[in-house]
Length: 422
Ligand code: GTP
Image (cartoon, rainbow, N blue to C red):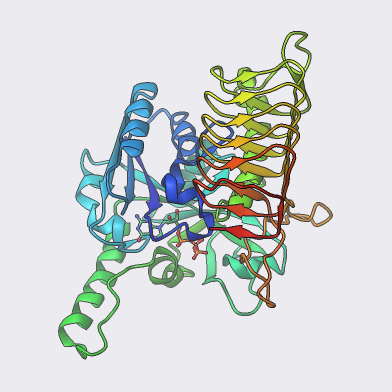
């Protein structure tokens, strides 16, 4: 029997995802028509031995989380449960806190996913590799290739190419270590808790013996505190993938993840993609997902890389590309939406143009990743980025909204460029 744990963080994480994460926990943000962590759970469903998926985070239980779990539970055959940490305990601290739940039923191992990544998860290959790479207790990490410059923003590892053992691991190094980076997906046998337990005990000793003016940390980080010390001990191995992989940190990276998951549907769910040859529907370019409850005028043109959520209304002559239109939004006749996210129940007036600037990885560099940089540049100016309309924003007819972020419930009366509207 196998289990899976998805680390979903909490409201204090996902800050680069605002304002969208103000209205919905980031792990539930829909990408290619389904919540980010739905894609993780769906990948788990392809492993025959999976019996339990545990979501661990610090979010208060909410209607949206309950609804997601109930509907996923109905669709998949295994148990899906949410376990709430009383405070953010760190990526390994949360696992340790719920070790009894993870080990109940005596699984032979469990998968741990970072909740904020998108990937064509090679779970069967990863598990197979894990079983074959060593006969002793050992741990396996999924890795991929990045560019030399971008590798510094990730956990970097040096692999013995013959044995696949991880010889050296540094989280976000100051200087170049390796272009092989940690994907935030692991296979652990129950023995991992011995290592996390030692780190926990060390923290406790520091609390008891330390200076009360300088309280010790109460979090345990999987990468720095557990995995880095395991490098070159013969216990940590890596399985390298060439499948697509990206972090979902900023809203811009959700547009990129949307494109990646839509492209995956050609293999896994062609039925989710709109038919470009349909004579009755709107004109479809490339990969487009339209929820069956959306109403789209046949004269609209959508795509490539567009997701239209439930109960969206799209008028005549509308053009949408490289964008996500969230539930209940209305796009009035002849408006144009490019590289943008249109928030829940927002309205874009007729002949208006909502446009952002893509932050895609450099297509001329092998293994380039999405840069999830800061909102502002060194001069305090807003970096050009995708345009985001929060929930229930109203854009009047015939205006232009360019490279801007509009917070929820705002009614605009004029055109704006490079602004954050509070
Ligand atoms: P940043 O660039 O700082 O975001 O670092 P990172 O990419 O290494 O991410 P981090 O290690 O902070 O988080 C990896 C995953 O674990 C994300 O999905 C987080 O939401 C989740 N996570 C982070 N801290 C915690 C925690 O204390 N508890 C739980 N349950 N999840 C966490």
